[in-house]
Image (cartoon, rainbow over all chains, first blue to last red; front, top):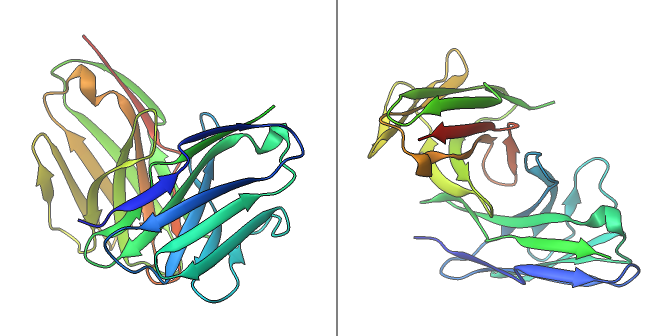
Length: 114
Length: 111
């Protein structure tokens, strides 16, 4: 089946620093990947759509200068949380759409900003 | 605005009971409806439904989609404590569209 690998699984960083999260499709090519965020006791919310070779599309209310997305190859998308603050602490999950298996999720990254 | 509504939001039953979880949707583009089980980490895929009236089964779990009435149900029979989780329903338009998630049903199975 389609596998999406996400790293790191957990990261703690100091306020004001930047954190990069990687999402890789292991056995298929993903021209489009999706980034979601989930706050405690809430559902997943789509943050942005990452497009290979072009700019990401951000959902309303998501700051593109704060959440930098790079999709430089067909198997890798990265999300960088810049100048992180405690309110950015959340569970970030990437997903890719593989037509045979539908939407496949990475294992998620729990970000804690202290 | 796309909308996915799940009910109930929480449910407590005893082991062995059968439960039915509901999901209704209003979206601009529809390609598939998906059910996920989420425990402490990322959601685990359960079912993807694209056609009306065709039941999908996996062990004690089953699901069906009604594209005319815009809803789906997820059934779990002979529930076990390991079924305790949040069950998420999501709808996708395919291609460049991400998924729109419902708020989830928090299911607790008591021994």
